Amino acid sequence: MSKVENIWTKNVRMTDEIERFTIGRDREMDLYLAKYDVLGSMAHITMLESIGLLTHSELEVLLKELRAIYTQAERGEFVIEEGVEDVHSQVELMLTRKLGDTGKKIHSGRSRNDQVLVDLKLFIRDQIREIATLTKSLFDELIEKSNQFKDVLMPGYTHLQIAMPSSFGLWFGAYAESLVDDMQFLQAAWRITNRNPLGSAAGYGSSFPLNRQMTTDLLGFDSMDYNVVYAQMGRGKTERNVAFAMASIAGTIAKMAFDACLFSNQNFGFVKLPDDCTTGSSIMPHKKNPDVFELTRAKCNKLQALPQTITLIMNNLPCGYFRDLQIIKEAFLPAFDELKDCLRMSAYIINKIKVNEHILDNPMYDPIFSVEEVNRLASEGVPFRDAYKRVGLEIEAGQFMPDKNIHHTHEGSIGNLCNDRIQALMNQTLQGFNFERMDNAVQRLLSPAE
Image 1 (cartoon, rainbow, N blue to C red):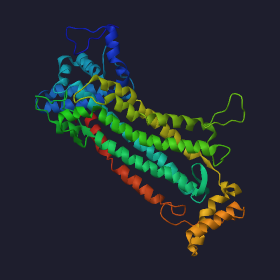
Image 2 (image 1 turned 90 degrees about the vertical axis):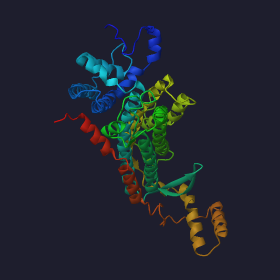
Image 3 (image 1 turned 90 degrees about the horizontal axis):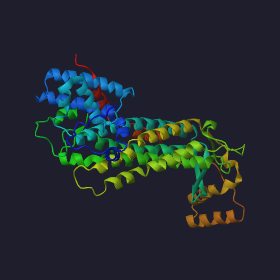
Image 4 (image 1 turned 180 degrees about the vertical axis):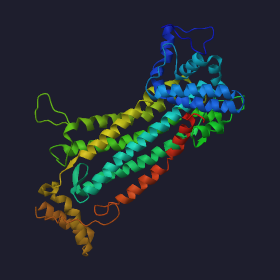
């Protein structure tokens, strides 16, 4: 195939080696952004027609071709050709081949800088919606298990030493509520993302009378990044903030995976993981290793490093665009697929996990009821320190006889999980995203005018 000339090439051509180095993995990464580049172009040219830079007939043929390219991207058929640097160039090249000079008009009033900014934000919005949906699915599994096993006691630990009675209701419910906090963090990332940078051009605006509010509405953004210099400063900052939200979810999953691996160990025997999520040994026929949760833990720990990776790439860059920012895509864009996989796997395992309902029948756990006895004595008027000492001496003498009937009533305790309130908080948080505005705007943009 003959080499395609880049659309901004002048008289100086770079060597193949320099081109390879500067493009890097950009063609591969830009495939994530293809359909979003098309959406941004559709909004931009609709605005250009409104200010007289395109005729109505030019707009119609351009929109028709862009819808066809969008369909290609949706089907996974979009290709960035050899010699074409990025997705923006490929889309414009395809339009120019089909429509001639009309295809060359779509770049008026914008730069590749604000193109990639809007592409990233449109991509991130969709990914946040998918992550929110999958996080809610894992949350639902955890709440269901919490309610199902709310009366099944298990040991609670501090310093990995048996401490006080806990319950599976508390254990499952704790991770559910953790995901609520993570979802609120994700919503903050969504709000920062859902602002329109299009029209900032190379970071200093345009002499064309652009209507930035129009493209904001067409793409379903909540508002715009108003200051054009700040819009460009948002490159890297947006990704870092989203990465922190992803890392928060990943942290919850990693901790839960560690617990589940530990509790499925034969020395604990608290839970049994689904057989299809474990693997055997090449020499030990009895082994059932918790590989899925171990890999989940590792992937989620890697995801927790993502904000620092992005920070180190963009750290101390002055305002304005720098090519350094291209490298962020290589770490950032694939991370969404990893987090979504971990959420799916975790929900699957929690759905099928089996709980040991008789853990505390073992007398080795009797001491965890010591605090219950101290509290009973204190309720009867014995000073707390005297009650503490009396029970401690009974344990040392091997005379402690636990009462395993637990009566906790305060909010969030064994007998009052507050799962209904945790569910209400999750639902309230999800409603705050308002994904419908985004979906409706994109649908209108893709629908041919009647």
